[in-house]
Image (cartoon, rainbow, N blue to C red; front, side):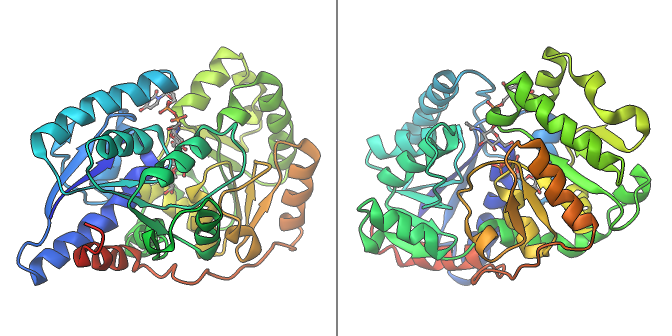
Length: 371
Ligand code: UD1
Ligand code: UDP
């Protein structure tokens, strides 16, 4: 089976790595069953947003790099489609595998399905039910046109069934992001990032922010910064800032509003996977608007405050250590202080988040039921 794996943005790389590993392993047992081609769309291109993950996750160099880069949604999605379609014409794969919910995910799936090439979507069925999120549109459309829908949790299966997706296309396999986390945990524990940043185990908060709904509006960012300032009086905050957020902080002239002067707030560049995982594992708690980090903190049982009003990963709230605080200054401070006062939410690990999701996916694909 000639399979193209498409990846393009930071959260794609830790999802693709376990898939490639599982497919290579299957090849050893089954006489090169898969012919594999890794395509990098170039949606993310900075060293810290792309190349570092190839090193940390031991990913092979992409076979094909589309170099699409940044742009408006239509520009970025359109450019990936145009370039990816050329690859499809040339390579004529039997299958295209896409992961997650970024623009590259939808673009690759759409280009493939129009050429009648079967599409497998890994991390299917997640819904925030908020269509102002660009990712929600990407999820809905990718799922609607995929042939294999690999879901991380039962709620995702339910969402897909409600949308009329036939049951025989849906495969509950677990979470590939957790595959990467469990595979790399011991290695991440060796990272020297804590002494490098002069932080102590359990003695800091880890923060990430990049959702347009939080960072593209000055007033909203200010509301969040107010809460961060208050929290930083009690515990240091380390903030590896996404390039979108760095640009917005400059554009809105907000860098001098960050509580950097009290030495309790560390604004740094985005980190590689192993360093970041180490910071997650050792944090007192995490504050984030990321999708994947809600899952990782649930598996690590580290308290997580999510600065959003919805989540497409409700299991991290129902079962995990996640609490939604939106961008409400008071709510953020209240929940942070609860943790600092020793009343953190404890969670359990969802079923099938056991490090073997990619293996299950490969088994389904190898049966080739739907091809
Ligand atoms: C994208 C995904 C989002 C995901 C996030 C993960 C979409 C619609 N959004 O958001 O779901 O959570 O990635 O990080 O696909 N930039 C750089 N260097 C880079 C990449 C981006 O400077 O390597 C800057 C550019 O100014 C760019 C901006 O960041 O315009 C936003 O990048 P883009 O890929 O459009 O969206 P993200 O916010 O990264
Ligand atoms: N991550 C990282 N370095 C950082 C921030 C995040 O390695 O500085 C990892 C994080 O551990 C998780 C993934 O990136 O595996 C999440 O990606 P992101 O938050 O960019 O996207 P989302 O999950 O929101 O789509």
